[in-house]
Each structure stands twice: as C-alpha cells, then as structure tokens.
Amino acid sequence: MTDLADVADINPRIEREQIDLTEMASFVGMANVSEESGSITTEEVRPLVDLLKGFTPFIDGDILVAKITPCFENGKIVHARISRRQGFGSTEFHVLRPQAEKLDNRYLFHFLRQPHIRIEGERRMTGSAGQRRVPRAFLEKLQIPLPTLPEQRRIAAILDKADALRAKRREAIAKLDQLLQAVFLDMFGDPESNPRNWPLKSLEYLCDPQDRVNYGVVQPGAEFLGGVPVIRVGDIDGGNLDASSIKRIDPSIESAYGRSRLKGNELLISCVGSIGIVAAVPNSAIGFNIARAITRVPLAKPKDRTFVQQCLLTPALQRYFKEKTRTVSQPTLNVEFVKAAKILDPPPALVGKYCQVVADVDGLKRNLLNSSDGIERNFSSIQQRAFAGTL
Image (cartoon, rainbow, N blue to C red; front, side):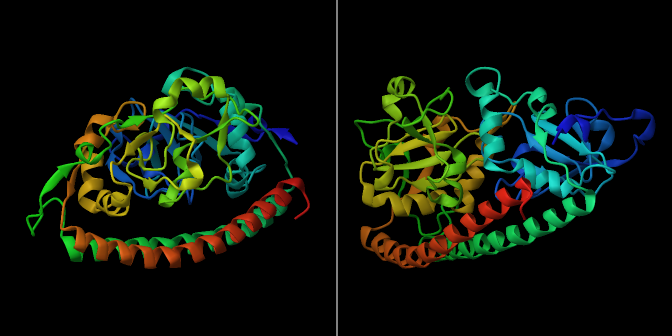
C-alpha cells in the first residue's frame, strides 16, 4: 500500500515552454463525461490559446476526477482519451497523472471507481450547500495497493472485460428506450414543431395544485445508519431507481425538507451536473427524499406519468433543458424552467395506446435489468477481489 501522491502527480501544472500557442486543443466540460462508462462522450476542439486561462489542463491518458457535489458521488471519474495532444476541462476536475514506471492508468481508473472510494471521498468533502468539494488532500493520502506493473495491467484487463459486459447490457436497455422514443414521435410528432397541432400545457399546469415543483435536501450530511433514504442523480441513471447504494441521512436533517418527501405521484428530473434524466417514482420509494440535484414534479394524475416522462425525454425537450442550463461551477437547470416545459396534450385514447406500448417494452426492460443485477453483483465481487490481491 502506498499514498496515491507517491505514484501519481495530482493537478500537474502545464509547462508553457513545451506548448505551441498556435495548436488546437481538446476541451471537455463536466457534461461531456459519462458516469456509467467513465469515458468522454464528446469533446470540443478549440484554439489552445483561448483555453490557457480559466480551465484545468490535462493530457491524453490522465484520469479526471470530478471534485464537486453531486458529480463526484455520481461517478464522474474518467480515463481521458482525447484527439489532441493537450486537453483542458472544467475547473471542477482534479487531474491525476500516473507515474508510468509505477502505476498503470487503467488500474488507477478502476481503483478510483470503487463505491467505497466515492463514499469516503464524500465524507471528506469541504465547503457548504451545493458547493462541497473533494479536497486534493483526500486524493494525495488515498492508500492504493501497488502490485507490480505487469500485475496491475493484468487486473485492469480483467476489469475492462467485465466492464464491457455491463456496457453491452446498458446498450440493450438504451435500444429499448430509443424504440419508445421512435414510437412516441411516430404517434404524436415532435413537441417543438407540433405538426399535429396538439394543445400544449406547461409541466406546472399538470401538477397537483396542492403541491409544488421543488428540489430536495441541500446538505444531506454524512451517511446515517437506519436514516431516511435520499435519492441522488446516480440512483436514477437510465430512468430507473437503483436503491443498491442509496444514501441514508439523519432524520433530524430530513425533517426540514418535508416538502420534497416522495408521495409516489412524482417524476424526478436531474437538474445539477447531469441534466435531463427523468424517472418515475416507484411505490417502493414512497417516503424517501431527494437531493438538491433533483427536481421533484408531483403530477395531479399519476396515470399521466408514463406519457409525460416520454415527452420530457424527446430530443426537443432535452434540447430545451440544455438551452436553459447555466454553467458556473457545474451545469444547473433552474426549477422555473422545468415548470415552464411545454407538454403535448393529445386525446386520452391515443395516450392510452402509447402507454400500452410502454408497458410491453417495460416488461422486456425488467428482464434485462434483472439480468443486469447479476452482472453488477459479479462485477462488484471481481472489483473487490482485484484490489484485495485475490483475483
């Protein structure tokens, strides 16, 4: 075991004398990082000279670790593979550069993505409200097992293969989601152009008049054994609630946020970090609360949730959310823009036909998700054994 700072450079400075100001560079924002795969989804190419000030420098092969809440807890830890020699990213990234003679970058990547690392990093966060961050000192003193380089590469290769199986299952589920979107557009048209001239209603208009659209707990505090479950963005990735690693908080903290306690008639929309993930609250989550990074939308008619959820997932509404997102330290969507989102209002009979299609596809998704649970358990077991030296 060794301190991570002994085998990796943390937040290394750019050597100005070694760069060419006429070069183009890769730019990676927080929204360009996938929590699921730990990869860069898209990159922009910009003049290097425009990025020297105000952004975090890195190079191809570095590990980027989101420092700010909720991005760190949600798993925005990425092995940066970029098309240009020099990269720049959000100031909310820590950059880790493994010393090549001591530490393999894929080995480090898999090590940092372990759930217990995220839990411990969250405990060590400093700051207040939505600006809490993982300090550099946490990474510097993080103890990492250090077998030989060949052994590190062997472990990383096994974890890469296991992770690839998880990715294939996620791709299959994503295909079903794409099918539902294709059927939606075929039956109702694009909500933005509205070619069938359906009436439009604001999302707020569809909500329970005795309730309100709101976000949740700003400072949930540390894990509290037996406390109230709080749903975070990472718990609804893919549109389904995964309670396997849900955080529990002190009831005395949660009691101040009764307004965001779940009743079972809501849609949840991610509004900080990853924008526009939409999930329906299952009955099993009634009584749970939500984190600040999620907006709670209590619908007047719970039976409308399926249609409204799919409308919110259309490219038009996702584009609307992105356009209304502001970025200071991280992408944030204001609750007022969520309430103003325009939802199609076609005849109930047509909506009912579509909801039956969704129900049929959801049956297929449940089978895949059940299979995924087994894959996740196996991956967690392999991951634990890998860093315990028993793989």
